[in-house]
Image (tube, rainbow, N blue to C red; front, side, top):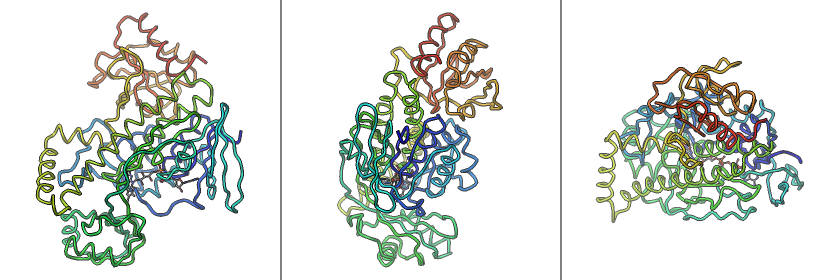
Length: 502
Ligand SMILES: Cc1cc2nc3c(=O)[nH]c(=O)nc-3n(C[C@H](O)[C@H](O)[C@H](O)COP(=O)(O)OP(=O)(O)OC[C@H]3O[C@@H](n4cnc5c(N)ncnc54)[C@H](O)[C@@H]3O)c2cc1C
């Protein structure tokens, strides 16, 4: 075997997955078609759940200084903002950071953990048998080679070669609407001009190095196919049409057109081949969710795949990647379709008036605390919860573990999320000494035994023990007061999630 897992694509999803696999002791090999790392940045956001995940791996401090925190975000570009700070998280904000920066930081981390990333290596074909996956690769000089690994993951974007080679369908709809983006070095410095553009629905955002990004959907150009290049003349003309001025834009660094093609992979797993990120789901970049969803896919998949590689994965664990993440992919594709429709209706002459009224109504709804919190939970990723796998499970099973104070032997960490930095499970004892020793001796380095005296979190009222998965979701929780009964439950939960005792 050339690697435990071959990862096709060194975008954010592939790099995050490489970090997760390497952290868990598996040997990933990342193959990237591009000759070198990406310089242009499509995405600019890391939403709260992604920030939590980075925090859980001790990486957030690398990202924060390179970005800018933004307290809330938009839904369908409506004036009332989603209030992320109202959600239960230490990270109630978006981090505005260029995708190229995110990729560079993840590549740095992957390298530190010993993962190999080969640029200029394109996956061209793939086949699998009961023991592994054969991957054909075209190298930098066009020479084809064959590699073999136990598993392969397609993180190779919307046109995924891996998905196609694995015969996984990608049903959905072709693009019907496109928008344009421009990163420009020169722009009018009169704030009133840019405020006027914003008021007309143009997204205006400062990037690094004095560059400004503008993003818009021009009703007169929104049916132009995304494959058609954007010229500066077209970009200026669209600005004039939308906001009455070309905003003085000049010296474009990057002009690009993108569309609302929306597709979801039929399966996230076919035998030893899996899909993550844009290879599994594509949609309009409404509210900036694609990269975030890809990172969260990788976080869900990494530890499960490593468990399969190491041979301790309980039966069915790897299949939960599909059953947990595909519904999330569907929910994201659907909310982006809703947002796109809300924007499009007000741009089409036939629906301009009712479309504007619909937007006004949605905006009014967003001012209601409960509605705002629900949509904020969805877009931020903090609302993500997985269905419980065991019948009669505690209602907490599958939900995010709140970041309460906790301590474990041999670590300086003082809160649960920090205890996840090593990439293992955390068993949290809230009942005073129950079971820690058994967890430590039986499940060794796979599970960290921790204690907390901190009740107080409303979700944890009456809870005696919690088993937290490596991705920060709750595997099992119990409120059983009887210590002997709890012991039985605990053993079943540990074996069901963390495998037989080592
Ligand atoms: C205009 C725009 C703005 C966006 N803004 C945001 C935002 O603010 N927030 C957000 O979350 N998302 C945003 N997105 C979406 C986001 O950019 C993508 O969801 C994200 O890049 C997906 O990451 P990925 O790693 O899954 O795929 P990609 O970034 O597409 O990476 C795939 C990688 O695989 C490589 N590859 C392809 N084929 C092969 C092959 N055969 N062999 C080897 N390598 C291969 C590619 O070269 C590429 O490097 C935006 C998208 C657009 C178009």
